[in-house]
Length: 144
Image (tube, rainbow, N blue to C red):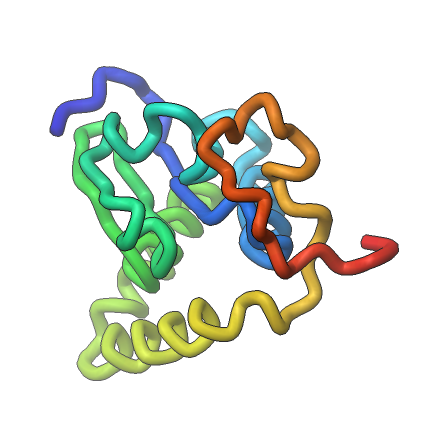
């Protein structure tokens, strides 16, 4: 898959408040300029990056300008590197045993993401951007 854009893309669960909070935080860290946030429920996003709906339900994806697609903790560390203009997080991920530990932690957080405090999910804030949303979000936190 080739991507001609100079932007990286973060594909996340737009029905999850914690995921939305993390994506917005990442965008702020990047100065809002070099990472495009795409909820997986956005029309055409999954097809564009050849991601299945099942994959999108379980993990975050980060697509680099050269078309590399990372998922899970590897995606998070790469996104942090781009946002902060560093290579520190990917270097830490590559340390012996560290990547495996980070992936295990990521899987636990992903499986329990609706239990964490978040913000109003992206698809609730921007329903016009999420025509493929089921509207079944269980993660809106009142007052957030």
